Image 1 (tube, helix red, strand yellow):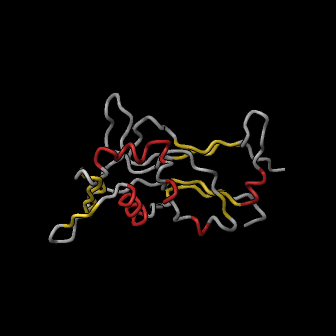
Image 2 (cartoon, rainbow, N blue to C red):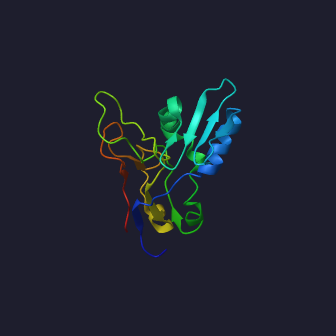
Image 3 (cartoon, one colour):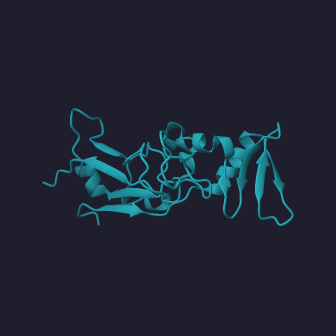
Length: 176
């Protein structure tokens, strides 16, 4: 695979480490968990008894902070929990730095005059990805107009395109 330029792209169905993310949110907010009798719902409240999050089989909701938490700074507040692809990126594959909001899942249907919001049924994540091998990485042309020579980001960032936003990588690859 190192002899040729290789690009993998698509929906890799990656999720963030929800267990670690929820534990960190509990510690950060000094929250406590209230479970119902069936143990099928997890709710966390802060010291002022404001609901921080609700997690069930059909709900992943950070209530008033949901879109802020996953959208602020293009999702960089939760980016450290995106670690599912790490084992594959420690050798022959590489992914450009991600500085865009999670690619999934967005609300069905546009909200007129508002940017798309994340659904509250599952945890937002970076599922659409582009991976390249080391040979391709070496062949990316760096010009004087851009320090990196490539763009890696969301397509239709402020538009509703469906539940999943595609990503694009724009660069010049020198094949000679």
